[in-house]
Image (tube, rainbow over all chains, first blue to last red; front, side, top):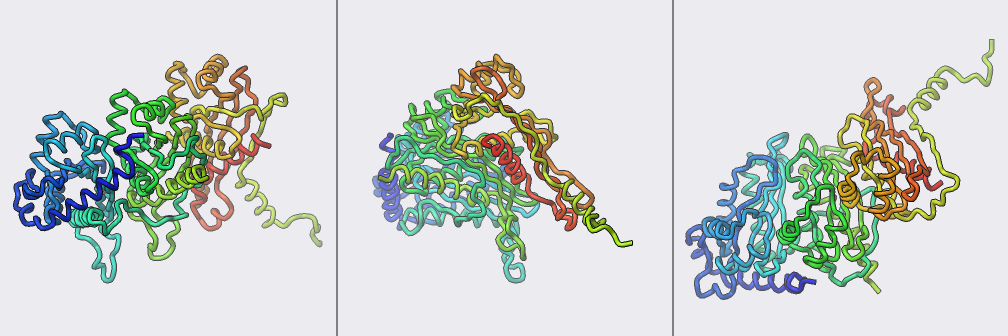
Length: 385
Length: 192
């Protein structure tokens, strides 16, 4: 196992980041006044590792999005909340120096560069997951905080997604004016969640309510051959068989967040997994194979790899999602979980749209949770004496 | 004249005819009497041939079949990615229609006792007046990898427009549930 990605190190890093937040809370005005890309805590407090590097946003929505505007809004919000942020030009220069193009994850090279060159103790990865102009306009964003250790660990992860008419309320007062308002709402909510997690007043990993209606109808479950107290899990890219771009990445992110929520599971940062797959020249054209499992075990000692296929990912007129997930024990090459899930946003909705799921992001969360809960229940049963 | 007691009334005849027309067919079955199916522990499900208009039907049905077969606990199903890798490595030109040599070669590469091949004959929506329903028709074969012989074969058709759908103009059972019913029917035939 890679000790630096262990749960204890994740907690330690989160505690360190929380300490940093406390330390720099008073430096809000100074941080806000600092130039973009060089914003940070006062020099005297830098030794406490107080900086977060904000990576350029990734667009997984399949639509054209003005990322620059969103990035600026996010950076401003982080600064307003008193966080010391390295963003804009400084991060771009660092990425250019190391020829790092992929900003949807953090690998060891990026983590080291951010730590040594920007003085950042964590990196913030943000991805636009929904930017809908069809039907009800919607916006969604996923964010995660990754430590800048040599083996980057996910410290916090959350997402926000909604459509303009999710909650119309009395006299339609709850209807949003458009996507810009939804963007602002998502930014405020996610940065608030980050600050709450850092200060210890909020959860490090959010989730959605458990829903039996969204559990997979067809499933097989087994248990890893050598149950570990804290099994290490790598979520591999899901094969996208839909017409929507990056649908596999979105479902993969849901699995990462849901797995990371369970304290006994150690989840690898997807940037690390991607980097290892590239280094070993693994192409998962038809899905996960035994060779992939061997590499995952050899390269980063993952006990279990999770992968799958996304077959339907639609937003309009009703969110629809269909995916198959498969978990493979890397030591025996045996499947320990496989299930197929299919749901629509309007299932079980009879009166006044009550209970309707308005975005595919929310639907994905509802569908992924029972899958992960089922997987972990099987592993717990095996590891308990 | 008083009608014969045993002659059904015209509405009853219409009702029975509707039911007969709407009911899913359970299809035919072949099973090699000399085959010891208990010895089949590891199988690989090959890509299904798709004769329907829905482009992804073969993969969808294969996926449900693999998961449900594995969920029975009677057989271990090799991951789809591993099967795909063996097909590429073994340079199998038509994985949906295997020759005996290909079956033996794949059996050795994948270390499985049998291969499952299948054909999705129909997959999609059918309409009858104002009503519509989902229908799935598929045939599946099990081929022993040691000899390349077909040891089991079955077909199933499920779904369609039911009486309730006709009367209420409803859209019927979702496609996924119909697929599960068809696969369940096939598995019943395999383990019967």
